[in-house]
Length: 106
Image 1: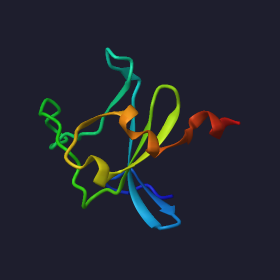
Image 2: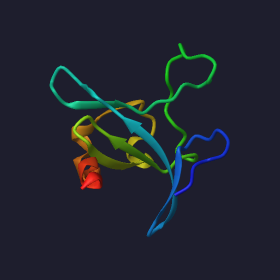
Image 3: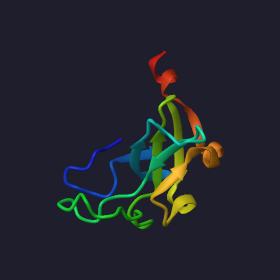
């Protein structure tokens, strides 16, 4: 695992059996009115203009979203599955759930 030394679109470089992948890490503690976990995966187009609407990440610049919800569930969601989106309802990505953060503390 590696962390970029200067600002990049990704948060971490992680080695998987298939090679090195660029991960953008997101977390959420927000449940919608229907009780389902929702997470924002957009970015501000300009670091200095925080009021601007968020835009989707460029699929050429990151490979995977690593998402942790308020229950500690961990998802690894390929950018190709969410290209163009700025928010997700995690129920739709259950096949991408890879475990729980609780297991890391055992």
